[in-house]
Length: 497
RNA sequence: GGGCCGUUAGCUCAGGUGGCAGAGCACCGGACUUUUAAUCCGGGAGUCGCAGGUUCGAAUCCUGCACGGCUCACCA
Image (tube, rainbow, N blue to C red):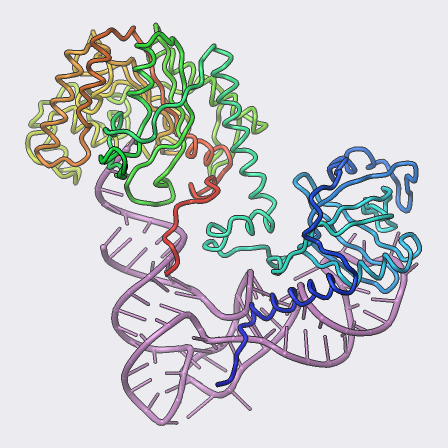
């Protein structure tokens, strides 16, 4: 049988062989070094030596830096390379005269693109005008055995980009930038919340009941306890227990898990922020939402940010409109003046599925979901959600069919959900029971009945405003990303084979 | 779940009507002391996503499957 070598293996074989020769011939092992005193980021050179003119060098300045070799251009007795670190890219100039023959030949012989180099050198600008370092000393800090993605076109294959994100990050600097922005957004959340004296807490991801939202949970099993546990779908019920427990302002930023479909707006695990303030209501939460999002926009550098074909204006105040008004505006129907029966008829005419027992307000939310939501491009607070679709929100005392609740829509998608929290234990129990009945009637996604939470409410929850913001989605809109996978480093993927 | 599209060298991509598997980058060897998608000369590199079918002959046509993308539906 003829032995065949796969080409990829062949490249790696060559590199491994080279590594072995390097170890043997020059008594040097690139994987032995465990420290390099990197004194300067590459951006330091750009920041401090941009004033150098063509062919001008600052020999009094010695830069000690390190990074990954991205390109090499060898020219006999002088060579150029580009070094990249997490701040910048900078050209290196290796010259026989300044390095000495032995060192220079060593570089040409052993250094490949993808390798990590420690560099000592003087800043200068080439005749052609590129800021560079004249290398006076260098050390090979680590070797790459696989080739870098193509340098000109970058890495485009979406599947590889998501599965091997590190390659995406190496090849596409704008991707690195997007995740820096994500970190900035989360930092901004913390700064705003802390500035209002809000305490960051952590609540269970594993719990016997997955409550606080409508979603199918992931189920897992704990061996020692011998019970099923659910991965959380929201942090809501635990955070409100903490307000019962005398923390007046708490928030949590963390992962939620929902066992549902995957598309450009949904990942099975996603990051949400939830915050609860005692003695505050949903209007305070609206102001807080605005404050956080405006601060995030500012952190991105502008209150006008593009998303696809749209320019989104994050200048406050955001529009605030009742759902009834928005449905009237977009559909021409005033659901306050129709009967349940008329509403169902209108729904049928509008092409919506009707079972026959829906209230006019439930139909209204259907109209909203189907015909209004995706039209809300500019940041819009939608107020006045019916009680039926808001089992954890306080009723509006002037209008008991509605709750003191809002959702914020940006680019046609829900970004925030908030309400004056229902703190009446008896009402809450009734609404849970109502959800239970829905579940028994076959609604897989009705809220779970959480007896322990009712007990907590019975001990007294102060009037409380609560808010949840989907950080991935907000990050998408602030970074002009068309898919949630572009703002999650390692999105959920089906394993290959 | 439905529809459409994609899968060819490590990467980016060509390969009308079926007829010897290609280019650039990357890699290996050589020349070159200011290049920057360096250039020039030479070389190696492929289970054409997988499986089956049609055919003298399939990267190409047909069927199924896998993975991915877009989209619709469903869903927060």
